[in-house]
Image (cartoon, one colour):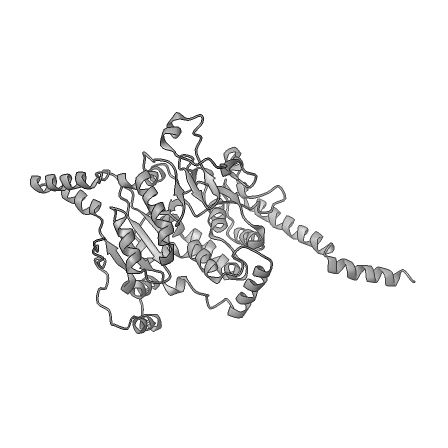
Length: 440
């Protein structure tokens, strides 16, 4: 396979010392940066590489005023099977958080995404890693798409224990959750990933001027051709968040998330017509969430003061490390709190699989979907017991107010009082006292 050119991004530093570890330490120890973004940009700069795909350069040449240049570019596009880019595209990226060892899992995903959609639109990809990407990874990925690809590392501030979390206490919390067989309960890297996806990826220096993102994970499948642009659909229809699969979270991973959310809502007087979707009749969190391994959403919404304030509140509560809060319930509850029902979209026509969970459009009653999709013969999760999609489809927007927040907190506290009364240890102690006084 011929080696493809990997270059520095225009406007980014290009000269670095031989010892990058010393360079990185000097960046982190420097206290004179004008902003966090400037520091992060300097820290990751040696590990940022870019490949300009042929679609971008040839499309630019095909629009040249010079007839010969334009014709030559169009002939080359035809030879390579590259379709012209639409006249209108959103300011959007595919964002992929991935490690070098996941290359073989990701290449089939990339091929499907290109064939099903992106070969007609040529949206760029941003690959993020907590370690530098290998040459092998970058070359294989760059050769697998005609679109622009950029590779970068994650700032260390975004992938480390914050100074307000005690390392020993966090390790003990992981040990207890591992002993309780909570999935990923003993993993520190999984917690870093959840925290990064909850509150930091949208702050990455390479996404600061981008409006939309489509999150893609290695090993997922896309089953249906998309003959329209989901980014443009979101932009033109006032949508800010979207999903394909909705399911229930594992309660053992988020025991205190709902309480912290209600307390935050009480302080900020949050209201929306979507919050009730996530609440049971008892005022508790019903565990429904939009599965965030697939999401197309507005980066401007995530960068808003409202969202960032909620994340910061949760971060200070330490639940990402002392428990195992996932980014899916955080994104979902934030959408429920800060968005209205008509700002969230369910992409029914995107056939998708992550692990054993699959969504496939109705290919029995819809000839159009039957012609566009090739779903495997396996159970559609939409109709499974753990799916929250039926609730979504039947949900009627209902305004959530400060009174609802106060009532939910009251019910939660009353439930805890009741639970404490029936706590086995307390019951045993009370029986001892009853036995003692029964002799008088």
